[in-house]
Length: 253
Length: 253
DNA sequence: AGCGGGATTCCACTCAGTGGAAGCCAGGCG
DNA sequence: CGCCTGGCTTCCACTGAGTGGAATCCCGCT
Image (cartoon, rainbow over all chains, first blue to last red; front, side, top):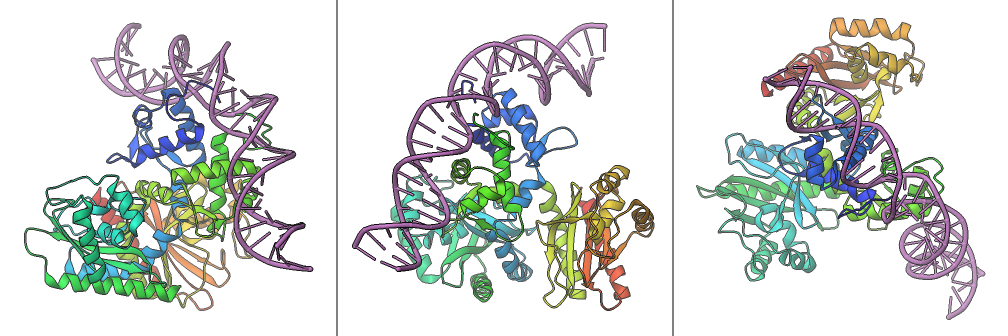
């Protein structure tokens, strides 16, 4: 190619920057100018590359001319083995947990240095939380994140610590001194609880999901208001749901 | 770029060809050589571009070194508004339909000239069908496809006919003379039924899902063995489920 | 009819990308 | 234990695909 590339080197990286712009919070569709701004690319370049993406199907034009993620990307996403399989197996257990407690329940996997939410049942009259399907939240401040971190190995913890972890709320743990014993306890007890660490007013109870080999591959959690003490039965319920999914996974394999 | 490009013109198109290779049937992970073959690209080019995709997260390396779709693409896919929203709204109705009939139930939307399956509940002891989440099947040979085609407008039918539609089984309809009156009847009756048109031994009953404005945005169907006559109550059940989802969509909007 | 903001297209310049070949690595076999 | 064989990565000199500022187009709104 040519040109006076200032930051994004090649066409590939520019395409990735354009796609990444749609991962940002809020807006699912963007006008070209906003897209170029978010991707950090000149308008003409963005226009040309976006047109190619639209032709391929990776992006779509909405009725009002804005751009959004295309069905082709959704289709490609379904080809990843983990989310589909885990969702399918876990769904009945999440349903039961939801019916029983009428609180937010969710399942997440490790994605780099974050917890990626694969599925979620939203309680209308419970706390409003940040977790959402397809979203990532930090490992050190969420129930599912702490579970994944606890069984993620030394190296993962080291990488998280050098990120470094942000103190999102006063109760958020950010140091090795705080986290190491807590993770050891989570491994020992097989359950993690949080309170006002990611979202003010929210507490959570989370347990690990294991595959046939016993490796932790996901985590399941329930999020409840933190103003009252957490119903002691929730811990058992989450444990049971996680065990059920694990057993099902072992059977399928 | 440079070089002696034989078919795929630019970097963008080559990246798309690489990603498209993962949409093929069967294998979810591919070794590089197979990937290059499917994408129709030289090995060295495929190696370089795949490495960039891996670095970005669009592709991942499996434990045995093969390549598969990455979580980043799954995450991007969740940013498309339709599948997530429709799935969430439709899920309870699909569940009910499944509990009641113990047959395969599914929801699909129009994707180009095909029906794209968004969600699906699989009956273990019913017929084995081709429909699967993230997969596309022809409009003219499936229940959901015929529904989407019936309300897809003149132009869609014209484009389907000039594809042209393949006669997959003896009972598959492929001509305008056959399809036009059938689609008119589907519009009149609000329901489509098929028998041995896509998969031998499978019959289906499908109904349209409408949004707040009354436009058909999806279709719901049940697939049953075709050896026996279809239980007459299924038609009503599918209609009711579709109406339920439509009403829910109207409320949300 | 004229304005303003956003999207597309133009065009001469140039470097990112090319692909055959060489190099590398691991595993199987005699 | 050394030698293939097959799959993947890296090298390198060449070149046309891609660049981006500016001009143009296309709306909707006065």
